[in-house]
Image (cartoon, rainbow, N blue to C red):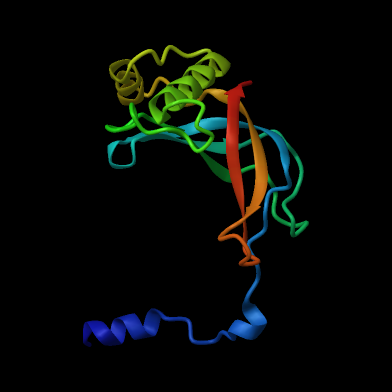
Length: 161
């Protein structure tokens, strides 16, 4: 039997997009409890990405069926990049460098973490020090792309529980 035949046998052929399509359920806007399950330093994107699994909330997503607990959400810390020292934020109040450093400092304080340097952060990630931290996250819904009628959940705030 060829590889093409094997793949063909695995494809589900009994579906109808018009009848079977369901919008992914969304987590209602609000504050939720969760636990950090993964932290990745993404050098190519200049960010620290935190993956949080929601736990202990006891409610349901927008479809009324899917539990919020067990869902995952991502939070990003954006790090300064080369050129941010001279690039201004859209508001024109500070450089992108200063804005990103200030945001990280506020985050570290809210999480009760020492994130004083990239070396300290990388070591904590490598050692798994952040895994298992109990957190509170604020989840909001946004339309993306704007005007598309498609919605997603965002997490723009995370603090220690």
